[in-house]
Each structure stands twice: as C-alpha cells, then as structure tokens.
Length: 71
Image 1: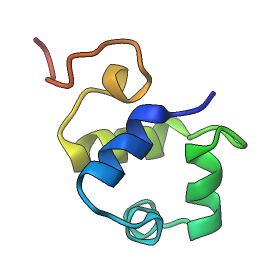
Image 2: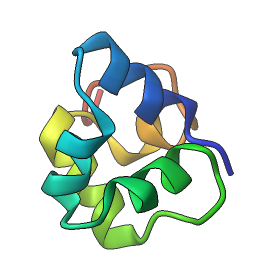
Image 3: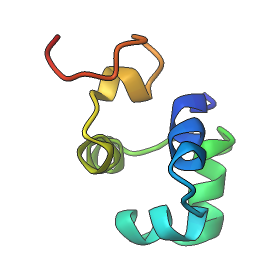
Image 4: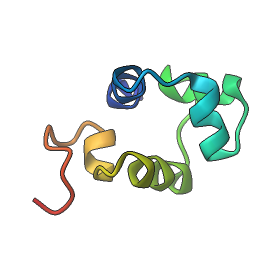
C-alpha cells in the first residue's frame, strides 16, 4: 500500500524524510520504504504519525478525505 497522504503531508510542511524518520525512530531508508509502499507501516508508527500531524489514522490510510479527527 502506498501512503500518498503521508508523503503529501510531509511535502506540504517542507519536511524531509529524515525528520519524520526521527519521529518514528527508524532510518530514513525505512521511512522512504513506508512512503513508497515497499514495507507496511506498523500500527504503532501509523498512530505516531497521526498524532504528529494531528489527523485521523483513516486520513493517513486514504479511507477518508477529511483529516479531522472524529468529524
């Protein structure tokens, strides 16, 4: 699964993969593989990203277009 919302949010905020990798305590290469769908994000890291961006997990997964939590 390719996480286009994760990449778009990072790019919209002018962040580097290295910065998000540090948030998740993974290497930049691992984070790149998450974005490109080479490896799957763990539930724990998905929640960390949702908390970091203050969006719902469903938004990160592309299940909704609404980034708001509980709306």
